[in-house]
Image (cartoon, rainbow, N blue to C red; front, side, top):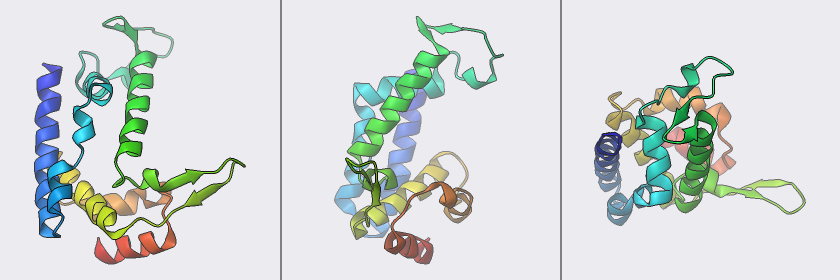
Length: 162
């Protein structure tokens, strides 16, 4: 059941993002958006985390070590964290893709090319619609922009086009 629920969400999300991409001329990006979510190393952790039999792990009392098909709450969360990292690094429409951790420990924030900026906004709009919030992109961005590390040119473009 969890896989059907997750498939339903992925299809809805891809549909709404595709429509948003098409509006800005990104036909190929719209068709190929988030295909990595179909890979087993993303699919299974996402399905378990969001739609597993015990998805409300965060609500469990402290100290209880519940198991979930042989996995603890911590295992499911760790698997999801790694899948999310893989997803970000496979998909340049995520701002996290453009963060360069340098060998000396420094960080560079790279400017996102226009086609990926457009896809990122389409992704945000599509996610809101797929989750039943409509186009809540501006409100979502205002709430979350402080957590994002964006190049000044990228940030300026987003705030002009959101």
